[in-house]
Amino acid sequence: MFPSSISFVPNGAVSRGSRRQQVKSIPDSSSSLLNHFPPFLSSSYLFSFPSLVFRSAFHRLSGDEQRHMSCKCRSPLIYGILSFRNIDVHIVARLKQDIRNGVTVTDNRRSHTSKEISVFCSPSSFSFRSSCSPKKPKPSIRTRFMVTEILFWVLKSALWALVFGFLSVVIKGRKNRKRAVGFFHPYTNDGGGGERVLWCAVKAIQEENPNLDCIIYTGDHDASPESLSGRAVDRFGVELLYPPQVVHLYKRKWIEEGTYPRFTMFGQSFGSVCLSWEALSKFTPLFYFDTSGYAFTYPLARMFGCKVICYTHYPTISLDMISRVRERSSMYNNDALISRSIWLSRCKVIYYTFFSWIYGIVGSCTHLAMVNSSWTQSHIEKIWRIPERTKRVYPPCDTSGLQVLSLERPVKTPTIISVAQFRPEKAHTLQLEAFSVAIRKLDAESSRPKLQFVGSCRNTADEERLQNLKDKAIELKIDKDVEFYENLVYRDLVRLLGGAIAGIHSMIDEHFGISVVEYMAAGAIPIAHNSAGPKMDIVLQENGQQTGFLARDVEEYADAILKILMMPEIDRLEMAAAARRRAGRFSEQKFYEDFKAAISPILCPASN
Image (cartoon, rainbow, N blue to C red; front, side, top):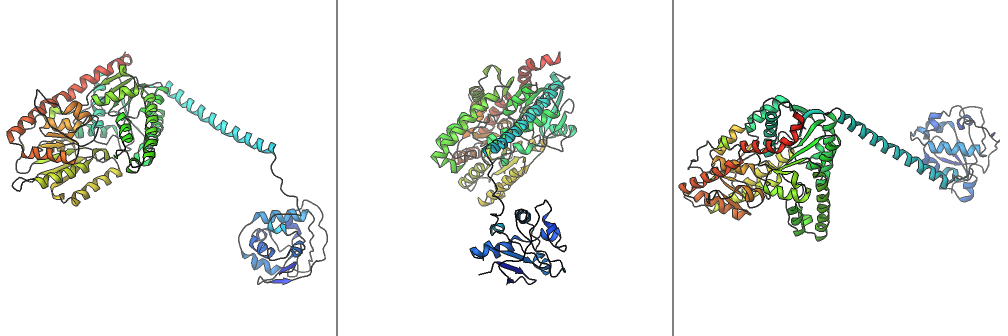
């Protein structure tokens, strides 16, 4: 065992000392601990003394030795052991307190090398449970109450600051409202039917109310008025009367699906509110026009004093989605892990039901809700419960430009086309598998068909999905028969449509299906999913004649492909002609007429 007196020598060895040293009392004063140490012991060295030296020495002593422990510190120690640079402020504070409470020190100042300090301390001084100094009292109930009150006051003040900040921005926005229509469309480069609706809506308002400016809220930072006008012409053939103004948004990541791995709908809805706050804070229009389906932004737009108009392509939540979760069907929006579990499926049903209730409240804040199909209208009326403010306006389809194409097609290499964004709900993999099955069932004498995928990529996730499709084609050994076209301009799309004998579309519950109408207008026989828009509005008989095929699974799609490939040319031309006549019901001109009729009661007071 170590004795009660420990001397520190240059090599760090421990030497024995006497039980007690000659000491003299330190006066009770407020002088610093450093003043009682030899001059060579500067504060920088003292604060670098490691606590490990004290603790290891202390725990090796007996009880009696601990009670009479003293430490001798010689000058070589400062340049040896004290080379450790660990700063322990707590040790210094404890030593100060121990000395003030009666610890005694002997200081022989004959020379720097012979100076020593002998300190009588209780063992707990070095184990940090001091008996020389009084124990640190626990905070009283009154102290705790005061701390709680202070924290509550701080939180309450912060909350009021947020409320006043919010109200100040809203009041400022209401005062500075401009006579304009603000189109909330964060993705102006998605290339889908929603973007076509955007540009046709802008053109219709420019024609109906030339005195109203059109503002585009976009998250594409490279977008400019000229580039957007050029894109409308190149991609969709829509010529605007004048370029729209642009307001750039920088929080678009908040509405991206990848930002919220779980509770995606709530996450994206909350993100859309934040993005809309950014938009309305930068520019507050008289009319807030949502063309992307972000219903949770409508109450905020109402607070800013805007008239809210929306064109809803599909409801964020539908009764069919709740039914599928209840039936435990695995889909792109219902993970297999959840569908296999009864408990998780029940929890998701509760989650969907609650979200549907909230969705109905925020959706009812709109002054005018335009929907794109009978299927969407039925769901919106059930959830939002504003049938008197809900109008069905079929989306614009460029049937006039496609109807001039010849119905005759090349016979040597029959082509099937698929036009859709590379998104998970479009079910491109099903199309590949159905095409592979159809090729295997073809006769050896039949011409080998070709499948062309045409679509756009919004982000890296879509690009990865496109690459996965290419890998899937290689896996199915049909990569030589499949072509992929990304982000085509409109004239190239028209050229491909003019060479296809059929068009395939496989999204379940497609709200409408502009691409299906484009197939029919171009003379390509459609093969669409037997649900929602294509089933209820598009692929219907025209004057008692069939206009296309509906399918549900891989086998049904493969059979439809084979029927078109094996169909006599006369029968194919008759069906294609009937499909073209049916597509005339969904022309751009029809959209302009219905759109202006629906929006005039809202916009007319502003034009007066």
